Image (tube, rainbow, N blue to C red; front, side, top):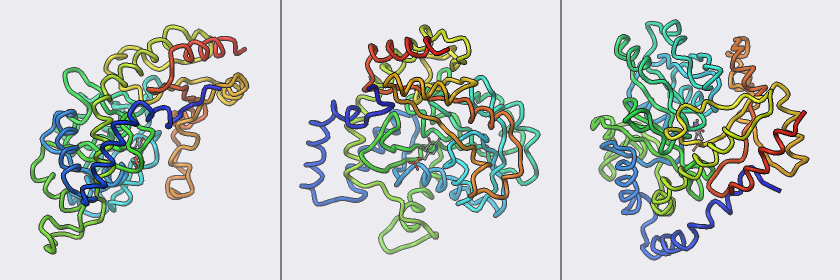
Length: 362
Ligand SMILES: *Cc1c(COP(=O)(O)O)cnc(C)c1O
């Protein structure tokens, strides 16, 4: 059996170093927002190449707090891809703003930048590009629109740790970026964790207050904040695992390269192969018109797969107001996408087996 993702195996190489870090935190007597969080924030900001990193409780909070920190008028609109993970859209709602969904490009699965301008209104305040599956959105047109219409850009970088865009890195492509360190991400904690990165000093100050009851000085509250702090244990674990992010991403790229050259099933649409070395390959997502049959076939060959995601956000009961809208490209993608095993614990020999099984599918 080749599981889609075995987190125990993913974390096994880090076990000894993580144990040491955990023991250090337990012995320190300091468990929330202490030296481990500061050290991780410094290291992650350096990895991303931004002035600031603000650790928070999870990726959804990272997105929500960034949107809250801009203090847009209630009811302001934020442009977001229709085929994203629902957290991108939930963050807009939770910040008291209105999500405006835009179709993706069916080749890259990323926000179709040619459709953004027609979605902009006088209420639009921000664009939320999602670097879905680990590939950075096409940013040049987004930068031009943001400039022309005075919009902020919040990158949803939850799937893009270590992704690059030309000379820049994910996290350097907007006014701020939101990160998740959920255990299954390219950089994953042993629990929930998240962060916001930015070069904006004032925004960073507001975020540091917002994540901690609106307070930067004990018992002094400057705004109505939340409790969304990163804890010392998760920060210590993340600092250990951050050291291996580049080599683990290289492993993902090696596996992706093998898939891209060895899957020959005629009805499979492969993800774009033009940026193999820039992509963080959080997921390896193919399309197939008979996705569910292919999934069962692989299951019968002992190969686990997953679907990211089976139901588009605008079809969820949570978004009744969006249920009547039609996004045919997103809906087709949700019917056809299939994620194949690809992570730091998968071996090349396993990818070889998976390719053989896919190519034998009739
Ligand atoms: C995982 C993820 C999130 C949310 O992160 P959590 O830490 O689970 O809250 C947001 N956006 C995208 C694209 C994600 O993949």
